[in-house]
Length: 309
Picture 1 (cartoon, rainbow, N blue to C red):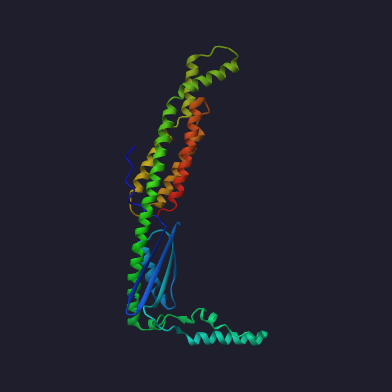
Picture 2: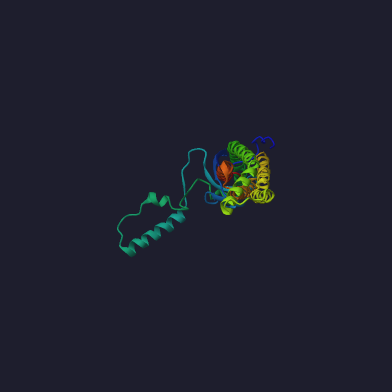
């Protein structure tokens, strides 16, 4: 078995980052939160009027991240104290709708103005929507958004890389246990051939009621039984999968799906080990125990790999 690769490459899909940029009396803040997902699943929440930047923002995120459910929250506000900006047309439309419903249903309660301010489109940060009508201002704000997003993405990548190193270290420990148990199974399997002969002879003696058995025939049958229960190929493939897994843990980029595929193959080999394990003597029982532990370790790896980008 080759030495384990230093866990420096993989990235977790879990992370949180925040960035803020103040320019020309405008403050822009972005929060990023990511968790594991099979693909890149983006959810953007932006202030009214920022829809013109959505395509640009999505592309910037795709350039940096490959997998994960990512929540992106963009907040825009003046850097200094300023009065809120009320969209009077939208507020008037809401009020007319309220008055019409009051008359229709005979409701005497006065409208709640505080609740009115919470309705979509009524209140915006000064200049957030109206300022975007100006092409030059829109370009400046777009550049500010891109710079803020790049900062946030850089911090998110740093956190995801740190989490990835922790994951890789934990998985290397599990892989080391699998290597140890595989070696134990191989050693036990080599001692099983005499056990096959003893079991076969015992069964034949019971069936033949003391009649002498041809030793050469007994050896042949024992060899056939041992061949059907041979696990050397499964152990060799399992070792190969472990080595590939270790290499991927030291690789950069999107390796989560490759790890998942390898784990499926490792699980298949472990299942075959169990199906071939003969229930003879103490060696067979020990092999069964080690094979079950290998399956358990592979499941632990599967849980951890689910969070690898």
